[in-house]
Figure 1 (cartoon, rainbow, N blue to C red):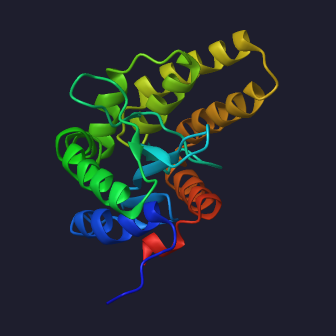
Figure 2 (tube, helix red, strand yellow):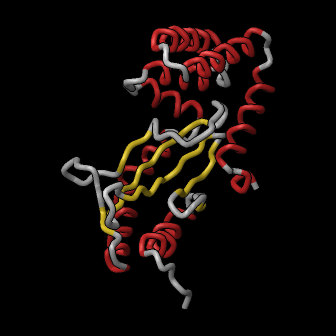
Length: 219
């Protein structure tokens, strides 16, 4: 019999959740991140421990494009597993028994909540459709994400409109980090106008893969 991890949450993830997800093409990235790549879209589960100590955890999930260059994971578009009453599902991993019970619940909740979302967002068309229904507080980020989906689909006019709208909102926001996103939108527009999107997208995908440590997912 295999020796279980000394950490109950890691042990339950290995013995219960990973086998459930492997058939769908998911692989462990870290002890807390389980992911797959579909059509240059990264779909992942994020097991988040409570910041208040103890061994409670929740499960976030998201789909993000890799052709929009990434330096770190973000959780939009995505959500957190919820209980039937709509409350966030915080689960116990204090003991092996607790963690095993909780992970079985995670596997069941994923069937109803996560996989329909992943199925809907595993293509660029699907991800764009989902983004169009989103209502983010950070509208500049949403327009940027939409533009980066529209451009590879050949929806050039929409991509330029949304990139320019994002630029306006980043300038209106005015915080220091907005300059980086303005530059990114301008690079996208320049790629459209020079008819050189393919090379730029490949460069951005390689950037995301490197920063996020995704090389093993490309094998």
